[in-house]
Each structure stands twice: as C-alpha cells, then as structure tokens.
Image (tube, rainbow, N blue to C red; front, side, top):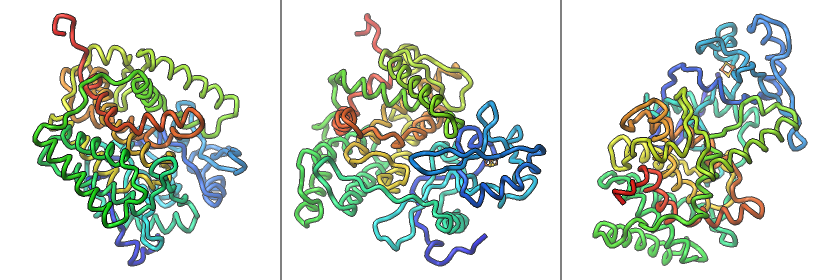
Length: 444
Ligand code: SF4
C-alpha cells in the first residue's frame, strides 16, 4: 500500500460519523462494483481461479460514450465473488489487496474542499449498517488507512470532480458563501441543549429567511452580520415560543413530492441494472413510474432495510406505532445524520446530483419526516410495538441510498420540484402526518 504523505494523513473528517466493518457482507449484495481498466484486466486473469470456475468475471457497458466495466452479479444480485455468509473469495484466495478499489474504499467518501490544494474531507455513507448505527470509532482514527486509498483513487483517476451548485436559479454564491451557510446550520444541529424538532425549526425558518432575502452576496461584512443576526433572532424567538412549526397540513403538491422521494428511496436500482440492456433499463424506468403512482396513491410497497417483510405505505401511516422525534433514539439518529451531512459539506460530494443548494438543503430537511415514516415502517415490518434505534438506522440506510443521487431539479418538471424543495417550512409541515397515525374520528 502506498504510504500516505503528511498532507493526506491530516484528512479532515465528517463529524458524528462512526464506522467499524462488521463483515456483514451487505455491501456485496446491493452495490454495483465498477472496476478500473487495470483491475478489470487483472481480475479477468486471476479471478476465475479465485472463483473456482472459468468464465468472465466482469461485464462491459457503454454509458454516455464511455466504456465501463463492472463485476458480474449472481442471479440473486450479489457479487459473484461473495461466498455465503459474507466471505469474499477474492480476499480469501489472493488477499485483501486483490479486491477492487470500489470495495476497499466503501463506505468511505472523499468530499473535495474549497481550497484546491486542501486534501478532501473524509466522510462515510449511511448506507452502511455500521455507519447508520454509529458503531465503532470516529473517522479520525481511520484517516491513515483512508489516506492510502485516496492516493490509489487519485492515481487511478477515480475521484470525480465536485459539483458546484448555485444557491438558487439565478442566484450564484461562491462556494465559501455556501459553506458559511452550512456552518451556521451545523452549529444549530450540533447544539444538543434543545431537542431535534426545535433545532430543525430554527434551521427551516433561518433558511426561509435567507432565501427570501435574496442577498446578492453572502460575503460582505454586512450580510455576514445579517446572517448571524437572522440565526440568533430566530433562535431567540423559537425559545420564547414565538415561532412554531407549521400547523396547517402540507399542500397537495408537497405531499406528492414526498411520495416521489419515498418511491425513489424504497425502489433502489438493483445492482445488476448497471450492466443490463437498454430494454431492461427501460422496463425498470417503467416500474419506477408505476411505483411513483402507487406511492402517490398511498399504496406503495416499502421494503425497510434489515427487515425481511415488506409493508404497505398506507398501512404504515394508519397502524404503525408513532415516532417521537424528540425521543432519545430518534434525536440521536437524526442529529447524527444532519451533523454528518452538514460537516462534509454534502453539497460537494461527488455523487450529489442537485444543481441548487436551496433544493439540496430542502431535500436534507425532508429526511426528517421521511426518517420518521420509514422508521415506523421498519418497526411494523418486525411487528414491533415501539420504534427503536434499529428502526431509525434502517430508515437512514434506506434514505441515504437515494439521497441526492437523483437529479430532482433537472428538466421542466425539475424546476417545479426544485421550487417545492426550496420551501423549507413545508418540510416541517410534513412531520405530523409522518410521525403518527391519523387521529381517529372520535379523537378528532
Ligand atoms: S469483490 Fe469481494 S468485497 Fe467486492 S463486492 Fe465482491 S465479494 Fe464483496
């Protein structure tokens, strides 16, 4: 392994993120594994022996004019090298170094920072069960190993460029300004003196005010002071009970948008789709459309992560136990997720597919109602009577698989979605209907 130099050894890390590989093998079952050309060549030569049978171990596809190589999958969708329960045949036969870079780096993510020469920030994906459950040590203790892998990724040109979102359409702030916004939000979510719902309320009101102000720049000393004053003022008003979460039900458009987000989160792409034919991909898209209609109608099927049973969204809403966002297990999970995302900062994660920070931040706020609803689904799927920490971990894994990987704000419909996502207050208006069953007629 290349020895990391001094700069990369000092990799900054996303806060509130813990990880320790539990050797569950889960990541080998759902993630398509893309190979570098050198890896594809090496594995075609050495892989069949590790596998114990002849035949190609990778598949090639053309996507947008580029030839991509992926490891083949078994009929059940798992990697062909996975031996049950969780043994990698490549590692067993040839050592850990023989595994593709995509396997050795998961679940770490490297997020570029503003200064071009600064090493990227080390984060981790909540799709990993260990990260979602906050098991193991913080990322600081893993910097050295990650730094070595970063060098390999750089040498193989596997670090995609960071996206550069505008704040909103026709409102382009430089990256430092957006990072300042994220810092203020981060400070809010890290302040554990108040429960999560109070912190989310401050964040939503603050962002609504920033969006409405349409400052031409956030950099000038005056606007910086104003931003601080907005934040402090909203905080003080919330503490005195002068600002409250919306009590009016969300608009129909906002409910439809939530249905779309849930459909995307609950219907992830099967890993074999990465190398599937155009016809199969088109069939999957058609299935996406049908799932969307089902979620809009409230009858979509939810397959919570780590749960064997699927549940119907409408049944979850009506019968699953309520989720209290201020309860310790909910507060801890939601705080962890928001702090991890805002300290990255997630807007510049290479997989981030949204063009505006306003829509991205609105999407992040919608993780709040979605996590409550999906945690209830996970509880119902295990026939539980109380939503617990494992249900929130399941919900966060489900959400993070789709989070920001979908280009929600592209195309004609995308503009409408971006506008809806940019309504921060509306994200909180969705919380009551996601957190608890609807009141019975006698209780209403
Ligand atoms: S190559 Fe090994 S580590 Fe990578 S996905 Fe396959 S079984 Fe898992």
